[in-house]
Image 1 (cartoon, rainbow, N blue to C red):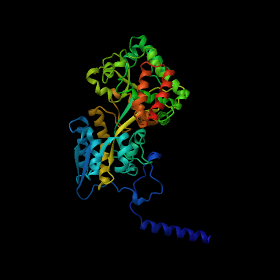
Image 2 (image 1 turned 180 degrees about the vertical axis):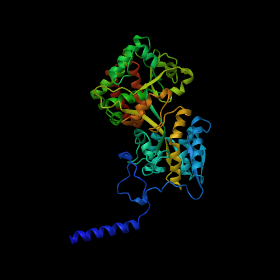
Image 3 (image 1 turned 45 degrees about the vertical axis):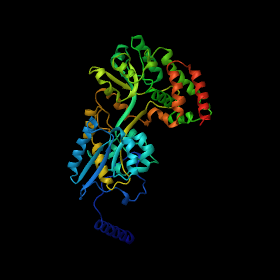
Image 4 (image 1 turned 135 degrees about the horizontal axis):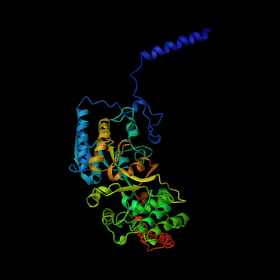
Amino acid sequence: MKIAKYFVILLVAMLILSACGSKATPAPVVTVPPATQPPATQPPATQPPATQPPAEPVTLVYWSMWNESEAQGTVIKAAIADFEAAYPNVKVNVTWNGRDNRKLIVPAFEAGTVIDVWDGGMDVMVGSIAPTYALPLDTYLTQPSVDDAKVSVAGSLIPALLNQYPNDGKLMTVPYQPFAVLFFYNKTHFADAKIAAVPTTWTELIAAAQALKAAGHPPITTDMDAYTDIIIGYAAERAVGCADFVITLQDKTGAMWDNPIYLQMAKNIGELSSKGFLLENTAGNLYPAGQQALALGEVTMYLNGTWLPSEVKDTAGADFQWGSFSYPAMEGGAGSIKNVMIGSQGLYITKASAHPQEAFDFIKYLVSKKTQEAFVAQALVPSSRMDVTWTGAIADAEPIVKGAAKGIGWGCDVWNAGDVTSNVTLPVFNDLFLGKLTPDAFIMKMKTDQAAFWATQ
């Protein structure tokens, strides 16, 4: 009994001493996806400071990939005004570089130019520039979003986008203007052909194409100089997955093409031409002829990005009934219809920035709900947030992207294989797609031409 009594007295004393020396109650812990969770052993002292407006004046330098006069520039300027109103001691100076931003940013860094925040495509930036010049953002992403203190910035964003391009396990960018590659189609044609649901497997796609052809609607086309890399990319992802596909292209013997799944993939693609599902004259389509044919109602389906409806809106007109669906699954293949070809423009904080917290506070406003809704409404582009609705022509794309299990790179990373892509892979694939090669001949030519290419390297 005495031991228990002394234990209680000791416990009470410890609690009193603890209360006397306690600090302010910490902010609630915000859950983030496992891939973005900071290491458990990280000491509290390394956490970014609380997001309080700075006491002294701060100037942030932002280099933008947009032009000031385009819709994205207009939205960003409004976000800057909102941010500066909330942080009166912070001024954002913008350099509007347009699409040359990615060419100019590295020379600027090398010259010692002060830049706090910049933006650009996640695939290019994270793979080459961000590892050297950008600050890892994992801990910053755990901070509350502008819109809801109970939701972290990471928690407000589409997971497949946020986690698509880690660098050595760290997140280097905040996605803020995404895209997705999907089949876009004419819903009026589908209704006319009595197609009740979008295809989810290759067999269903072929059945839909047959119904469209019977109803007098040529099913599919593309622009041969622009988008066949995403066709072979999706086909290969559904067959073997992107990592194995790139390894196959880098195989110096070409023997990996003997995998029977590649022959099945080739047979699937070959059906498009052998069964008469390609729009006549597709072989001669140079951008933007194919997508204009879709907008004119001359063809039903076209594999393209979520920017397509805005690119052809003047041709398609306000009454065009846009639909979209994910590239179908391949029976017997390793890929999944839940793996979606996506990407985004991302925001980065320079590693050398003197004001990283203020820079991230600014980024929060660019991915706030208000700003993201403005991107959708004014720039007609998707949003990277989970709670922002995609409207109009890209409405069908929203659940596909938000429900994606994994984001895959452009063309299933086909360009990561090197010059073999432009010298061998695409020319040979294009001949298969257009019916100039049989599936068996395609496999043989890929093997021999690829081996011959690598022998010269």
